[in-house]
Image (cartoon, rainbow, N blue to C red; front, side):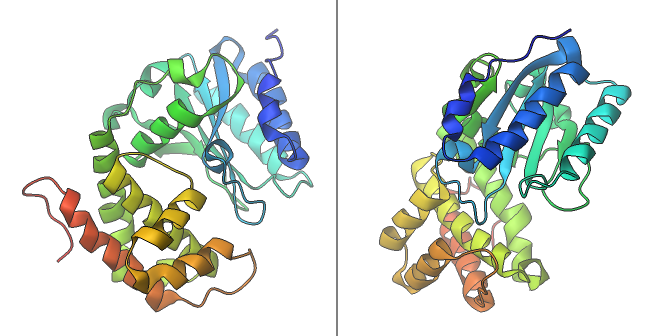
Length: 276
C-alpha cells in the first residue's frame, strides 16, 4: 500500500476550498492506481503564477511517474478522471494536466513527448497526446514557480530552461497556433477565447522581450504601459472581463495577434519564416 502523500502543499490553496477539494480527490485516487510509479503531484499555470481567477481559470496539474505507464494504468486513470468529472463540484471539469515519466520530464524532447493528458471541459477524457514545444514553457513555469502537493521539490526534477529556449518555444507557439487564426477566425468565436488571446499576446511579447514568464495579470499590466497605445483599451477590457459576459472584439483581437507577429520578427533567428 502506498502511503498517503504529504499534503503540506495545500497551504498554497488558502481561500480556495472548492479547488482544494477537487485536488484532494485527485491526490487520494492517483497514488493507489500508480503504486511505486507515483513520484509526485504538482500545480502549474495560474495557480502557480499567482493570477488564478475563479471566473475563468482552470486547474493545471502534473503527475510525475517513475516510468512509462501500462495500458491498464492509463485505463484506470481515465476511469478515475471520469468519476471526478461526474462529481458535483464546479471544478470537476476544470482539471487539465498530464502524466509524465521522470526521465522525460527533465528536458523537453519531441521524440519523448507523448504522454497521458486530459484537457478541461465537458466530455474530455484522459488520452495519449503529443506535447508540443509549449511544454518547454510549462517546464520553466513548473521549475521556477510550481506548487508541490506531493513528492520531491519540482525544481529538482527539471533542468533550467534558458531565456533563448523560452523565446524559441514562444515563437513556435505563436506561429504554429496563433498565426493561423488570422486566416481562420472561427477559432476566436468565443468571447472568452478572445480574452485569452489578448492576454496571451501580452505574455508572448513579455517573454520575447525579457526571456522570462510572468502571470497574465502581470503581463497585462506591463502591456498597458509598454505596448502600442492602440491596444491599451483592448488589454484593459480583457483584464477585467468576467466569464459569461460578451467580448465583441474580434477585429481588435485579430489586430493584436497581427501586431504580436510583426513584433516577433525582432526575435526570430536568421533565415526563419515569419509572417508576411
